[in-house]
Length: 253
Length: 195
Image 1 (cartoon, rainbow over the protein chains, first blue to last red):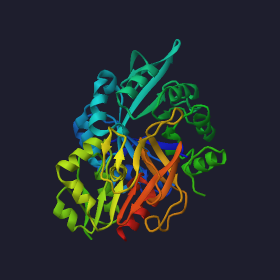
Image 2: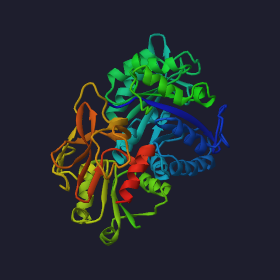
Image 3: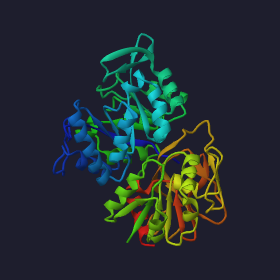
Image 4: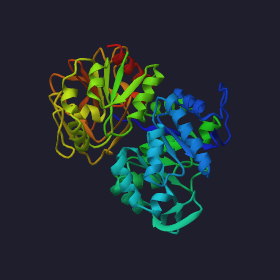
């Protein structure tokens, strides 16, 4: 059977990995290529590289980095940050990325999803949604969570599915950074309502949280950043734990 | 060794080229029949939609070239599907190298496409030489090849049990992406290059 995926996310600024990094046995943990390779060796199933820079010059640096990653990594990786048009997608796929993720730009121009899916195939289009619970429902937030909208998150996900998104990367802003666990209920609602895979993000603090997001949250994949970067959870240990808990994961003992 | 990668209107052909580079093998991306015929190995990769891919191949007279090669040939993902007789994807008549057909996954419980790592079972040499039975490979697809009696060299379960690797004479094909399947994938590519 298909296994649940564990996906570390790396933030990139000026060609370097940012956020605190606590990796032993690495010459240069700030090197996104070397860090990605280390995650791959530890058993990560995919990687996400997020470009958090703003200027065009820095974007070009990022594209060059994507080629270096592709040359050195033998597992799939997604790139995100600053993807607005189908030309942006062409550049990133051409640089060697397997998938791209798009967020705010798709909300502002939903038709771009149809264009991207027709030109490149749904399999490489990941729609990222930042959702926050307010009053009685989950709403979409834009621009890294700074801009609220009146769009209900699940409705937007369904629309994106029908327009050709291949996967949904769902971040709960209420859970992100808390280390108190993923948004299990929200993710289960998405996973049961959508025909495409859902990647859960936000809130990972311990190994049990991963078990919960797969069992209760019905997630197809779980993404985390700091718990991996700071070495609080080792991917090798996490895979073994999930395997022992009878969660289907890629683990060869 | 000359390795030709078939160039056509399918996505992510680049990643196969990069995987070969990791193995220290140079390849050439081409739709030139002479270059393809002269190559020691031919790889037919691809992601995308079946009917437009077949249209492109036919328009460039590549369909008959690909059917009549004698050197080791490896189809990947959409490549495998196009090597079958017919695909349900937009009712496409394909190359017909393998005597089987391609269907769409049908399931209320399963996500489509299948995205991620799954096991390949009942594997056969030489393509899977040195690879453990039930090893994991990376899959990304909505359509699958039905098993037949003569060509199956690997199987996978996703709602149903289907052919994830096929062989007919010098023609090999895998539904998963060896170029994205870590060490197992690299081993499989090496096995192919050693044929």
